[in-house]
Image (cartoon, rainbow, N blue to C red; front, top):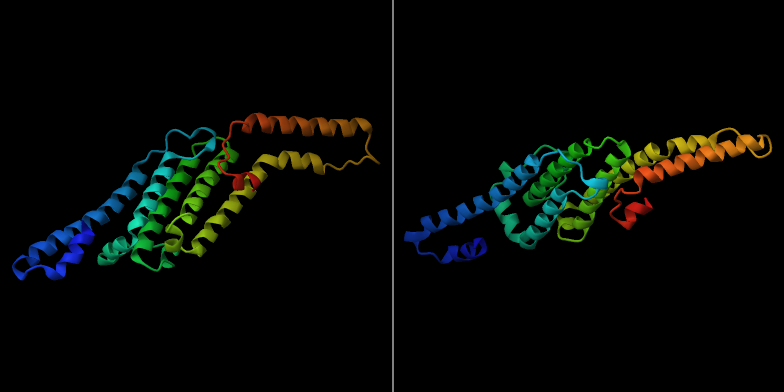
Length: 230
């Protein structure tokens, strides 16, 4: 509808031009309002119940599919956002790098989403599971962006920054999960100087830790093969 009205504007007779233009502007405001409502929807989504196994949260899937679909009308949305660009810019390093008002708006929505997910991650009692939740959801965001017009709006630098954060979380997860095992492996003992009993005890403790990790994490969700490799 917005595109139709835009294309008809030059042909409207002067007596009706003001009324027609008012409808056109109202449609633009309504479209911008939809993005504001999306932001409010994210903010209102409660951080009450953790997703089992640290899997993908429904709000992540909803927002990313919404943004992907919206990018199908990218040209129109860019026009609409440019009409009210002063009203959508928010303070953020990421937003400063954006090249258009639509990019700024989408970057802000994603920033709000990621803040919401980080709040939800704190529900988990296990720090390692909290990190799994963050990585699963951030990987989904990255993959959806790369597989759509979002990547051209957000830019490769944005993708790299998200990937850097993923690597940081992966390192924190490995530390939280495997620190006890690493301590056992680094215990000063060797086949040449340690007693057979000491070596057996060390392997027994090692196997016990591995079994504990398996029992704790066997039902955890690792959403993508690339995340499993990390």
